[in-house]
Image 1: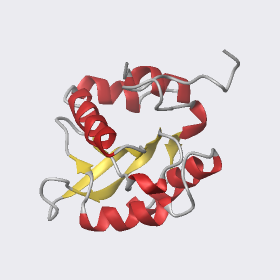
Image 2: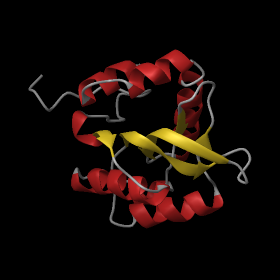
Image 3: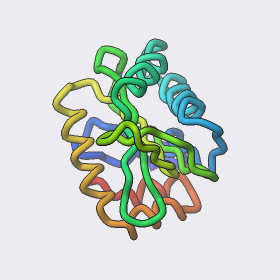
Length: 163
């Protein structure tokens, strides 16, 4: 494959994660800022409609996506309804400093997320399946540490290790 055009299959062969969709050591001061950055990347690459970013932000207000994990690294998995998605993809930010997301189980609790994965999926059942798959993967604190310590977008994708 040509450099910069590597794509790892995720759960189904139609979900894209490419180095262009990975922000490494990103700086963000809020959940909104990181969501906007990842949504912009998805839009630039043609995976989502312009309405996607506001749909993700609105959904995050009512259905938070912070996922506290064992250890000191936590994740957030924001997403929007399928009508805002053109083609399925994941965009990933590895943050220099964690940002506050509300806990998906207990919205009153704040989760300092260091890894943010914005899901752009165009089938409702696909969102549930991908959330479950990611939650399973992140039960291993060593895996999230390896992802967080990756030195390149390609390494992030490889260490995420979704089949």
